Image (cartoon, rainbow, N blue to C red; front, side, top):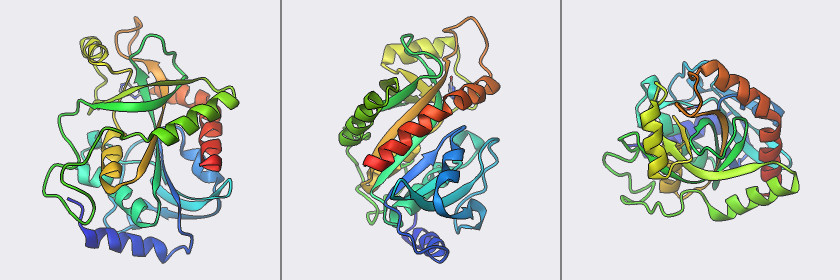
Length: 272
Ligand code: HPA
């Protein structure tokens, strides 16, 4: 359970570094960290300096909180995130979301790289997350509830905010960005799924599969934040193509899609 005093201490530490009160939070997934470098008048705070933030070891993640402005909006960006498969508790994975909210934001944009389960999708496509399926066998809200932060049994009928989804769809259309829509499935990892598991996910109604996002989204909704989730589909999920999955492929395709991903996110931030 996240403790109110820990959130306050982390918030006060960040506020001692900047006067800017952010209005939008963004979690930058694999390959997207560069967006944080575009923030103007940025204050960069390494996670390890922030009280109660854990140290992340994930390759390709910078592990900095970056606060600044982008397209006229005040932003707090997570350049790098914690993953459950790294061994962090879900409290640790999601603590930054509580702090992002405490800083004054009411919206959170969550991005990730994930595998395409829906055979109509292609590697490199972007996908608007309409809903999720939690197949990780756990939940970040398990444990005593902190009533200061949210209710014991939060409604999950609209985790991914409809208004923000419509905005993203319109922006994608206006900018000729092909934006798929679908259900994201959270798989704990770190092993990629087996072909049989992917067939199961398809039967269950999943369009994509990945190892992040759902814990942060659940905590955000518990706290009352509006969430927008956008994925980069870096590969066809296990067994769809007759080839093994590799992390290098994930990183390569994420890099190839980066410019349209960044364009979409920046325009969403502008119009939000
Ligand atoms: N499965 C799970 N996580 C992923 C994948 C995948 O195929 N691609 C990128 N992240």
